[in-house]
Length: 86
Image 1 (spheres, rainbow, N blue to C red):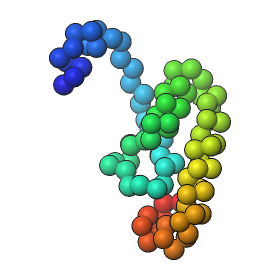
Image 2: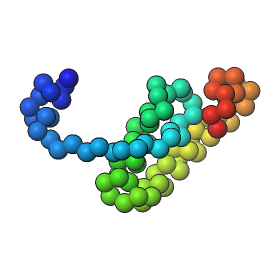
Image 3: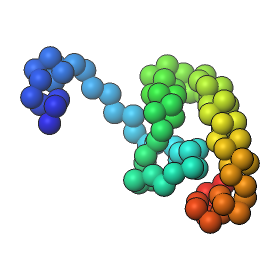
């Protein structure tokens, strides 16, 4: 709706990113299989527009953060709340 109501936004070029990879974010349930975190969406966009796999390293701290949070909550808590999302 915002895009259609604002002529400046409506005039901008649009890019379709196509098939989205599965999210690595395993701490919350996503609204759908195509949902990505903001960082994952940025990396996917850069890889689509620039060079495939050139931005993969940006996700290493993200993966480490998730793994650290899972480790801190303990495996029992993680399994109870998130099942087999690993």
